[in-house]
Length: 204
Ligand SMILES: [Zn+2]
Image (cartoon, rainbow, N blue to C red; front, side, top):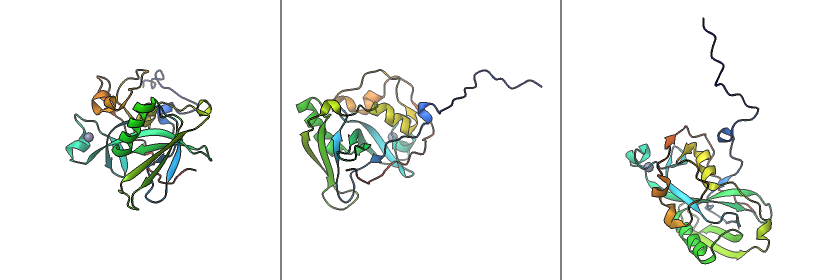
């Protein structure tokens, strides 16, 4: 009997990046109360998503099985936010409304990094209109922690690769459309890695 092939089997002391659990909580604007912090990204970056089997998943456009099942498609944007007191860094999931508001600020100020924001809802309903209050830029912007690339992070959480890394992030919401993510790259769906997606608890 032939021995099993040994070559090509890779063993690691720690799982490769794509298998590592995400260390950041992903938060939406809470139903009650507020969620605030300091923005760590230059701008929001988002894509079309579906909510299915209890979690948000990316839309694959052509050939998307969730589109084919007529599951509602929404745009969601993401950025890293740091609690002012706790300094906990979370991923904030934004709906289209506040993302547009933040994009206006991005166009005006050229970067969102260091801006304080406070997210709340107009009423206590889970789907209540989101209010995004934008405050001052903190004084010590250069001392804020650097964060991983949000697009790479979300693709890792979702277990997908939309396109080969280019080393350049799209800038601005004009370039945040699905079309830009449909680069002629690999579009594969790996199994979603079971990330617990939403935690509406706030940070301080
Ligand atoms: Zn879809």
